[in-house]
Length: 307
Image 1 (tube, helix red, strand yellow):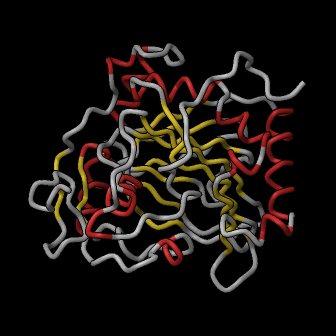
Image 2: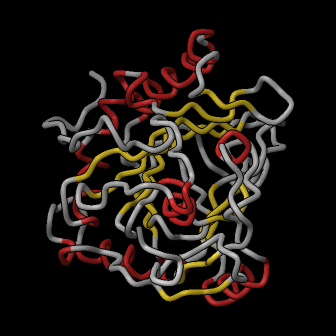
């Protein structure tokens, strides 16, 4: 096991917070492993740490996917499962994890070439699903997701070795300025923020409702934001946002009447599978961090989810 002194991305140790230069590529294999994106799009992703593709899915496809997510949030058998996370102090569903296993429709979405081939192209290899979930922010009740880098958590709590993963958010409702859209800090993927605080046992039980460890300090956040700004990802349903595992991101609460629903899939390189978690932590459950039962995602031959 790599000691904190030798780990280039050591975090949550007894040292203070730090900003550490990224040691890994952003785009692997010169972005030529697949051909889903143009050269300009690959360069934009490499520069900013994210990419918005609009009008990827049709209105019929969005309605089909949204209907499935809404069905799952009403299904008592699913709501009782550990994969279903509710908002703090309420029974309102915040997230449902492992949706690519729980739903054949969302399993098909994860293999759609319009998203899977983007992941393969950027990561320069075959990929598997490290995590999938449906994220809901119901009108008036949807709580915030505080600023964080996913890789910091995946590295410490899951043992992900390198920054060779990305997130794909498929928008199933219009994300506008009022309903808590995703916010990203351009260029932040090139700096790793080492966080303070020893990770409690079974941290995931609290962090999925409200994260308090693995949260960057305000000075580091301000420096990143002053360098790159903050981009609010407002787009119509059917759009897709891809962002690097180390891009700093968060979102505000939704106090508007309009819900925000997205399906979120994390593609990890088959060459970046998980090691044991850091500092003797127990592995998180399989529905949060896939380490046992997985295989490479095989893109479908068709571009249509319905019809």
